[in-house]
Image 1 (cartoon, rainbow, N blue to C red):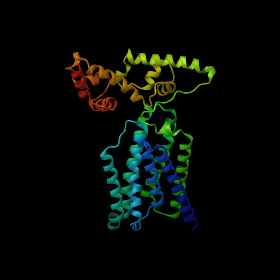
Image 2: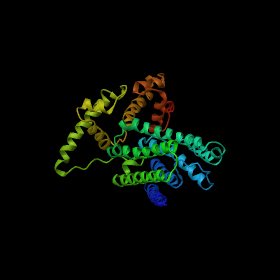
Image 3: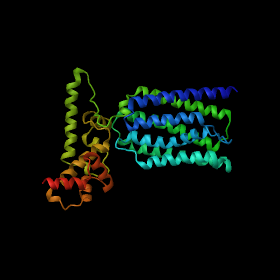
Image 4: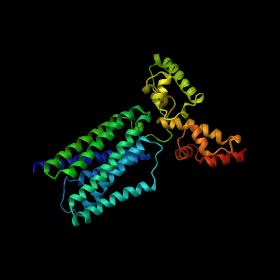
Length: 352
């Protein structure tokens, strides 16, 4: 009885925290995709806190089935949230909604018909394997995009937030698969979830929300140094920026295969963290790949508008500029110019 009371109290606290977090995110960052997905993830997590039960094999009542379905579909929201948070060029597509709908519908059908008609354990394992798959996908993508992130605070908090959420999600799925339900297991699970949610809320309070959920047009502000050292630091930073831009303009280093921020830092003779800060705070970029792509696109624009290169294939221009294939080039070009490379060439030919 005592454990059940503690479990209910913990769930209530979790739901309250998540609802406050969701409301805060909607109010402060509702116009930003990552902010909306973060709020949706918080709401889905609240549904999970209300509905989960480790190893539960009894028939699911109709009021609980939608909550369980939303809880399962929340792993798709988590995956999309990590994409939007760390890739500002990411946009939702129709098939993302289709994936979320398929996972949610599968969970609902599983609760209402598949589990009662066959083995409940098999149904539980199937749903949680899906959850583990999306959690793993989110973690892999987060790690893969980490080196290109130029925002220091976001680099610091991404591991904490994603690690905590993935740790709990993975633990919950493993418990569901391998452990039978009991009051002790459910209470421990609730306690871990309460700690994770509280820690995430605390981290969100300590980090400037604009670092995590920037508006599209926002340019990162320069760090304000004390008056005595500001001029000297500005002059030194400007020399480094000038040297960096010479690497871009003269050596066209962005053309090189597998160019990394570490490579540029070595050429400039400065630590990698210093170069990240310069590109972010002095040039206004939040992602290293975007910084490189902007230089590549400028070269491609010049080539596409050059009458002497009118017969050069678009793929050749893309490869010469440093892109590895046509698809990423087309997407990056249209994101920056608003038109495809072919349309851009046609427009400039008609002007000439």
